[in-house]
Amino acid sequence: MNFLESFKMALSNIRASKMRSFLTMLGIIIGVASVIVIVGLGNGMQIYMTEQFESMGTNTLSVSIMGRGSGRSVSVDQMYEIVDENPEYLDLLSPQVTMQASVKIGTDTASYTSITGVSEDYFQIRDYDVAQGRGLQYVDMLNRNKVCVIGSFLNRTYYAGQAVGQTIKLGGNNFTIVGVLDEISDSTEASSDDCVYVPYSTAARLSYMGNITSYTVTVTDVNNATASKEVLEDALFDIFDDDSAYMVVSMAEMLDVMSDMLNAMITILAVIAGISLVVGGIGIMNIMLVSVSERTREIGIRKALGAKERFIMSQFVIEAATTSALGGALGILLGEGLSSLATVLVTTLLQVQMAVAPSAASILMATGISIGIGILFGYLPAKKAALLNPIDALRYE
Image (cartoon, rainbow, N blue to C red; front, side, top):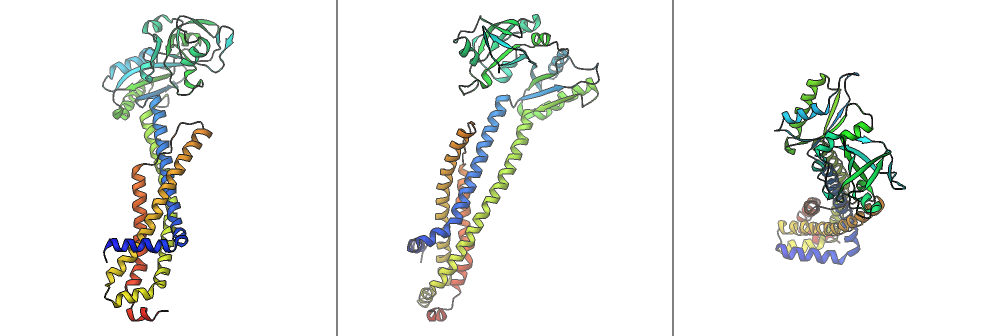
């Protein structure tokens, strides 16, 4: 008996006991579907997290200066010198000053608008495009000009798309709008487009800030982010002689750490979900043992007619593998459906644009595991059937 004949016989036996076969497959179906959904959720979270970090810039280093005592800190000029002295590692620099001030546009007050003081390179660092007018320039920093670039939400909501050249009042000071950023967020809500960017020197003066304590620095090569971080830390240590006076955070390193944690969590959950595959395999073994008992006389007749042990064994192994593979196929379909449903639920309930996306590798792995479980757990019943004595089998009632 060749493989095709054994496969056809396996399908025939499955059709003859549809409900029993379905219940036997149920553990495999649930296990495969669970693994696919969990892996898909992990992939979706990985993609979403990577996109969020990329929006902040995986090639950036965030620097926070705490200082040492009351008299030792680092100036903007010193930070620029550090960058200029290490061109093979560091590229662009932008001080950052958060202004706590009211935002008034005519008689309206924008309560949730963020005001940030930045350098002329900030938009290039964040990969923001200026849709109208111009960005901030070095002369604005030098002269502490009261100019600003606003987000598309403010431009659309308060200026009917014609904000360039008009004024906005920040903390009681009139600023001239010189540029409007292209839309950053996909949402129609304010989010990251409800913002105002002013020269950092102007923001520091209006905020009565002495030394600026926050900086964003880009690295020349994201693959050398760790080395670039060490170079910057060494330069700051030379100034402070105290590594607690500053903190440098690499977005690339943070993404790697988060990815490792997420992968570990998803692996653990997938293994837990995979336990149901073992339960399904035990179910297949149990039903195949029952099948051997029910077909003992048939086995005896076939062995009496000259069927070899390996043919008897292959028939039952193929039947177990077929049952498991069909369960795996149904599990894949269920997993894909649940993944689509999960995507809708996450998007609707959490307001997060994240797709639960099972990978082709996870589907192939689930298929291979389901077939492998059928073969593994079908071996013992098949071995029992192959070793039956034909005379005892023919006498079996």
